[in-house]
Image 1 (tube, rainbow, N blue to C red):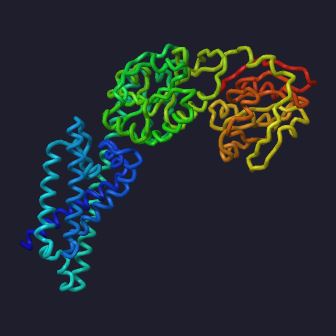
Image 2: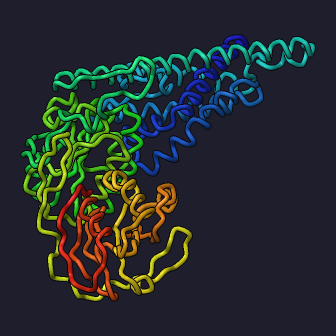
Image 3: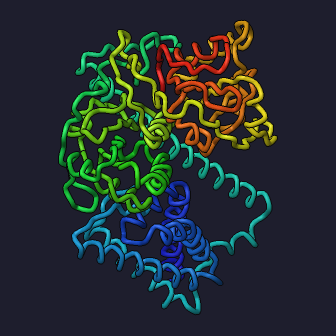
Length: 528
């Protein structure tokens, strides 16, 4: 009997310690599984944090004879809870992944899961009842009678076995991850080739000589084209179409993601925040490909209610020419494509920042290089503000010093609205720096009012006075709704129209000031 009890204790200990360690190494997956079993998101975080520790503690307690009965009771409690959760899910017609051993072994629950738990429960109950007064042979008693060399040798052997097991597990996970990455790259390349795009790969690991993904002409639909309609089922079971999303009379941002995509999963908390902040002015819909249950669990975990399932990417993703993830595109209220398709979390964040600013009535025409740039158009707010007092806000410089704009209005200044993360601003930066080094005679002083982080602005080495406007107050006061934009201020009053785009802004900054006459924009350039 003693040997039987020892064998059962050892087997249960291995099961629980292995399960606990596996869950500890894959806490996001554990949390997602707990959510799939119907636990709330906040509670799931607590459960995912403590469950691995409890399982490991139960496994360790089963080893010594003095604590084996308590470990067995703990095992009975955990197995009973697990079994009830599985039976409850199956009764509702759901089969979430068991995730009992983390990423090492995970499959949908079923009758076999219940049977396995019942068998383990019976073993644990037998150890608790039959071994309450005598849990059998001590698994650690031999240590007292063994010499120090044997103890050291045994410890070394255990350590080596553990390291080998970890290396095998890690290698398997690395191979699986590489396999998923290669599969995604193959799918992406196939989609690009199907679209007629040549995929260039440098053998020496250098930067590809071809264009970037977001700049490829056949990735994404052209700005101004009609946005394809679709009808996809949401994670809430309701079908939704593009027309139904546009019925709220707001622009729609479509974000394409995939279950198991690391950058996509990292983007989900940000997406939840964007939904809360900009939900009144922008409809953000996540179009998720991959296994529906994983996408549903992620939606529940992050509180996302507008997640549409496009399992194979054959509907919306294909129609919008979005072969990769994460990617995004903006659809205007009139159902036309309002932005190029962007790829990556940073580009999506920038697109959302632009989409949540008031839009400009600037005509777009395709350029020869595949990009879109603003065509010559009537400048924004042509004459309605010229002569008005310029906004007299107090802003901080990059060192945190408070500076009143009124102090800068004592001489003619061009106020340049800037964003260090704006692609058009970055393209304009060399020309701006050249103008700062060698300004034309009589040119106005340049004052840069910038969004973004102070460190990002410092890295661009702008010589002019730079003030930070992270909340966009100055841009709203000046009616400047994009970057780069510029306006002339003379004698404390607005003395020009808003000049939108790099070309027009640079021209305004180069033009000598000959008094307070209002001047109109004579050109326009790219603008975000």
